[in-house]
Image 1 (spheres, helix red, strand yellow):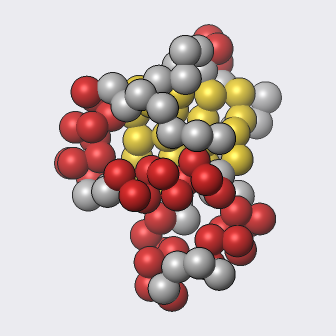
Image 2 (tube, helix red, strand yellow):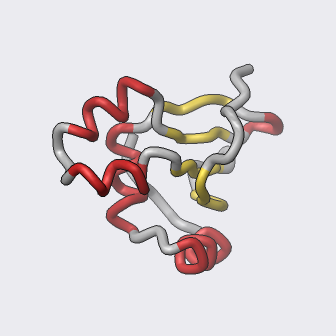
Image 3 (cartoon, helix red, strand yellow):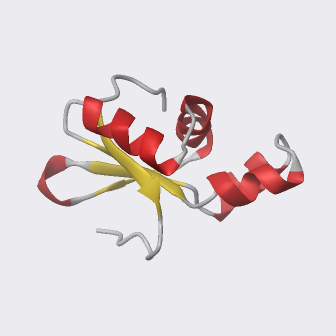
Length: 91
């Protein structure tokens, strides 16, 4: 999946949480997409994505980026980003 428009709220969330744009681009390159309520979608790293990412990043870098997620609206705009503290619920 390719990274598209990032909302102002998502940019503020990235800044507040210390998530660089490169990390978001990496999430979209290696992440998995799950449908969420109300037509939105969640992009996150599953074990397959983490394994592929581990081969292309320095060892300490994957720990920070592996638990990221992004929420997309129905028009594929990134509305927020953050770090997972709970499991992604699959529908």
